Length: 273
Image (cartoon, rainbow, N blue to C red; front, side):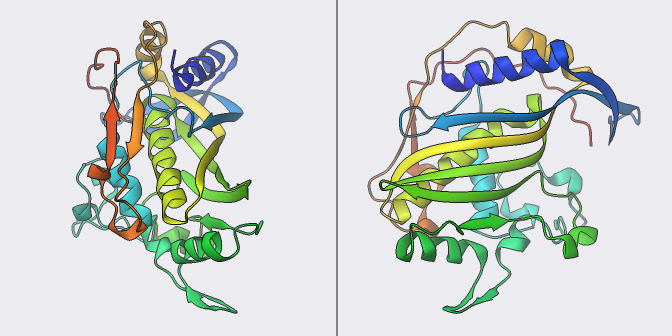
């Protein structure tokens, strides 16, 4: 069994058996208020160098996931017209903007004693020039701009640490829709960790995923129950082409996926917004 499958099954099983059913902000497309079954405080650690965390219980669109994370941290965009997928369309205005959210925050320049950097450029600078710093972080949760964000950031901060030449990362997430987003978020940030390590001549280390509110929506419960009962598959291999050196020149096609065995695609499901 792929390790991410194990984490997903254990987390979902705990939510289903120990979680509480509560009201939430979101509504279903028909206007019905949604409910979630939830637990608070989940931590999963993925050793990305040993096994890429790509769910096998159902197929995950790895290129789509990577495209979104590059949209945020490489393109530093907040416009859905720069995305290959349509996952953000529900939160976009008539121009395609999602407000001062996600990529918008990554392009804001901040003053440091070494000069002005945006958050991504500062991250790359520190990993190259001061890799033992304990201050290498990014944060999308800018309180000053929250009122102009069409959706508050879910996965909102990364903290990096270099130990024995390996780049490790903590991903903090305030809220996680287990069916719609968990496998997607884990895969895309693992890919991002690989890119940052390659761009700064570091080895790939561990990704620690910290979820505050892990939940399953009421209408998703039967789907999740079916999903976690599926047969096991071994983890696939995901590699980064040797030609990739520059973070800003990397593309989704630079990631090579092989030996990906997975369960059947689940039927299209509703997403509460």
